[in-house]
Length: 257
Ligand SMILES: NC(=O)c1ccc[n+]([C@@H]2O[C@H](COP(=O)([O-])OP(=O)(O)OC[C@H]3O[C@@H](n4cnc5c(N)ncnc54)[C@H](O)[C@@H]3O)[C@@H](O)[C@H]2O)c1
Image (cartoon, rainbow, N blue to C red; front, side, top):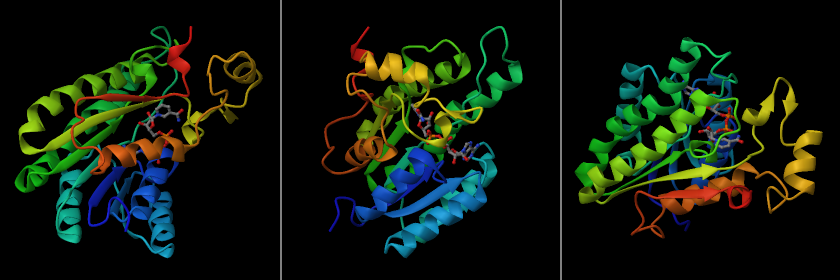
């Protein structure tokens, strides 16, 4: 019996990277997992792999900023699983650009996927949790929600918004035994870390500054499973009195300067 046995979970952006790792870990811990992603091929393959490994999983291909489609999918998941216990707001996009080079369209699309869809997804799922007086909402923020690399302002603003909105939801939903927390990762080795074909966690600059000089005290980027473990904890009944928190999982990155 896993620590999520009998739970029904929804994970956005589950076609690859951290979302896929989270879905796998959830299934391994006994949850029935609905995987949502805009990439239909990836999300089908991930759900099939989880099912083949003996887990319960189902894929849903949609753009989570299409809120009519998102509402339909939430209804389908509740019918499929009989309830929804856990929501992981994980999907996000990263568009590089500074205040000088990015566009209003980049800003708006980033806000839509990375922040507004967190609000709408939570709004769609919360009634199911309120009805059963139980729920866990975990949103993936970033250390860039409070410190900045200097070239992704819209992404950082959205992540700061996710942190603030996590606290608001925790206050609003606590009376229904719905716990709302955020995870703020540092560098993770996922497709998002590949910038213009280069894995930013393996460049000479990364190796010199973050690894050799110890800017990341653990001297490496995280594997997705190492962040997913924290998400599993926050989604589980080991987490019962923690809400409104932002759990930093960055190998010590933001403890140094
Ligand atoms: N990779 C890192 O270094 C890092 C660091 C800190 C935080 N994060 C956060 O972790 C989370 C997961 O990131 P990742 O690294 O796995 O990224 P990723 O790009 O590898 O995966 C993101 C997934 O979200 C999906 N997606 C994007 N827009 C969507 C939409 N509109 N509708 C549905 N699905 C959509 C993508 O298709 C993709 O499968 C994100 O919230 C990201 O901001 C990542």
